[in-house]
Amino acid sequence: MDNFMFYSPTCFVFGKDAENQAGALVRRFGGTRVLIHYGGGSAVRSGLIDRVQASLKAEGLPCFLLGGVKPNPRSGLVYEGINLCRKEKIDFILAVGGGSSIDSAKAIAAGTVYDGDFWDFYSGKRIEEALPVGTVLTIAAAGSEGSPDSVITREDGMFKRGASGDAIRPKFSILNPALTQTLPAFQTAAGITDIMAHLYERYLTNTKEVEVTDRLIEALLLTMIHEGPRVIANPDNYEARANIMWAGMMAHNNSCGVGRSQDWNSHNIEHELSALYDCAHGAGLAVTLPAVFAYVMKHDVMRFAQVAVRVWGCQMDFANPEATAREGIKKLQQFFISIGMPRNFAELGAKEEDIPALVKSLCWGDGRQGSISGFVTLNEDDCAKIYQLMV
Ligand code: NZQ
Ligand code: ZN
Image 1 (cartoon, rainbow, N blue to C red):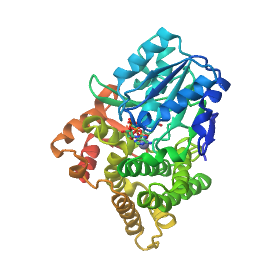
Image 2: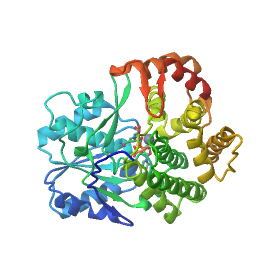
Image 3: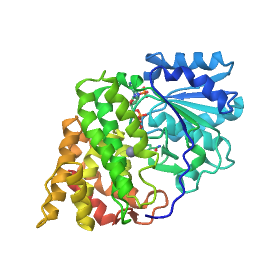
């Protein structure tokens, strides 16, 4: 196991009606003037924004509203949020929504207290300082409610890039599984896929002897395989939604990733798809993961065979471990398809003729030097072959 430092101070408040504690939590973490930042309207329609506002009002906290965050959130609204926070002297940002609203809130939080262009953080500069952020989560997926990360798309060039820093870990996150019951089935399934991808990206490691985190990841994958179909069959199943919501947080706050190298090539390859086609991140991952895994499997066949046996119930073929590894990848893809995710470029809405542009942006865009690295290093040729496997 590698050396590590793990700092994860987010306060999680989990369960029914937990959003009514938003005002008390903002006050506890020092907020006095609050920006409520949310998405395209689901939280308004469900009455959630009204309940959150009432909770802030009960604590006597002035609040300002900025909605309109799109899935795959854009830089334009971040600049607008930064201007608003400076003008109104806002000192706390409360994101209400999914990963997109939370990531946009994190970008505004970092940008407001920074003299330069906030995009510097998305081009490699670490975030050291930010306004405090809290979240009310409405979809189990990105894990941004417990992560030090934010992903934003720069409209000039359509680069989708990530930024990181413990300063943007939420001070608190409110997780009420009942809030996810209004999700369309497709978004629920895309969230399940994203959570599983976060687990796989950590499972693909070059660090030896990491049994404790291997076993944590396997337990969470087994939970997703059990609960995913139950919630697709019955969207009102509170208990299944509760298990998925907590699994989604644990999959990405890095408790399963400490002390080991991680992959993240699949995420980078997918981000080009959601940047170009504006598809759901989870749907892009459903197509990406099986292709990447098939391509890189030979780097460490036993790792893929291990997850196939321990998670997917495959029989270990000692004479031909590659066959076991392949079977596990096939079962993963069949699972994604069974919950309603796309299987290829056509079903995702992607086009074969765009592969050169995808590869160029992936390997060279915004300061990259011709390759991406993680579990293995992939050059332009590798990436083109991987996208081709998705056709
Ligand atoms: O905008 P509204 O109207 O709220 O609709 C959203 C949106 O259309 C809808 N939705 C959310 N909660 C709902 C609901 N509809 C009905 N009822 C509810 N309770 O669902 C749609 C998707 O929302 P979004 O916030 O985009 O979903 P998600 O949480 O999957 O976030 C995706 C973004 O997170 C990034 C992705 O790249 C993508 O941009 N990621 C962020 C990470 C991080 N910060 O740590 C890590 C992830 O790997 C990921 O890259
Ligand atoms: Zn993800």
